Amino acid sequence: MRDDVVPAVRAVYGAQDLSSAPAFGGGFINFGHWEGISLDRPLTAEDRVRSQRDLYRCVLGALDGAGARGVEVGCGLGVGAVLAVEEFGFASVTGLDIHPEQVERARRANAGLLARAPERLGFACGAAERMPFGDGEFDRLYSVEAAQHFRDLAAFVREAARVLRPGGRLAVTSFFVPVGAEDAGGELAARLDSFASGLDVAHPVASLTGALDAVGLSDIRAESIGEHVWPGLDHFLAGIDQPVRWPRNFLPAYRDGLLDYYVVTACRPVDGG
Ligand SMILES: C[S@@+](CC[C@H](N)C(=O)[O-])C[C@H]1O[C@@H](n2cnc3c(N)ncnc32)[C@H](O)[C@@H]1O
Image (cartoon, rainbow, N blue to C red; front, side):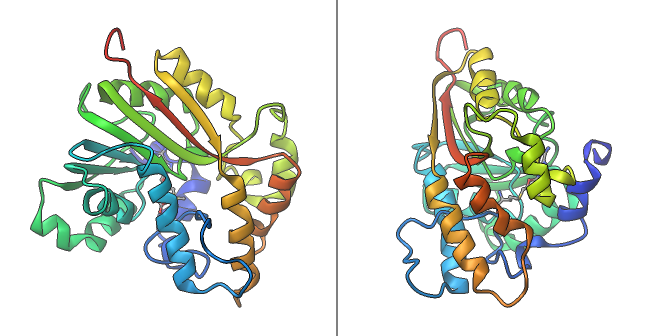
């Protein structure tokens, strides 16, 4: 499995626990959803954790997952999977991550629920593009800020459609290149180390929605949420002691139309899916 992992991605999520860096916190590793958090004052570490939890709430709220068997792709430390179970009433969630170190961290971080209710939470090591699950095993699939790392978005979508049962639904949130800016990859690499290093891939959002359509999923929607992501993140980063260079370039890239943050949803039709 490790042969699948791109070196730049392994360097960030393998040996280190990025969630403990000052830019993140609370076991999460995402840019956050800041709607409802006042940006007219200095932001706190608690605000930062809330923003990351709220990004999960934004995705899970789109899924109507009460009683569902869920899978999270790119689960990191698995704290969002626990939120899906405890706050959104999923019957069970299996968190999938490509890094064995992340899967181990997730098992340690959530040892309490794993021990109390092992039928409701589990973690597996594997790639989004080749999921270690059977056909139709899940009612809901979601992914939070991981798709920008997937090398082969079409393979991820094929796998998502395969592991969802007919009538199942998915929600993917991450940053993508907006419609009309498809050639932004070079400019993003010039501005942001994460694209230059190969950690992030400049996937056009249209390649995700197009791939979902190509595998026969329906009700495909891509909602822009960038206004709730980058201004808040940038405000938070401006206030922390440690210099954080590359993520502060995201806000100008968003304002210049090179990048946006989306929640993409789709359903597997009951007939012919
Ligand atoms: C930015 S972190 C997000 C973690 C978590 N979703 C959160 O919001 O806290 C991205 C995660 O995706 C995982 N990842 C990267 N590429 C992957 C792939 N191809 N398949 C599965 N997981 C992957 C990384 O190991 C990392 O844990």
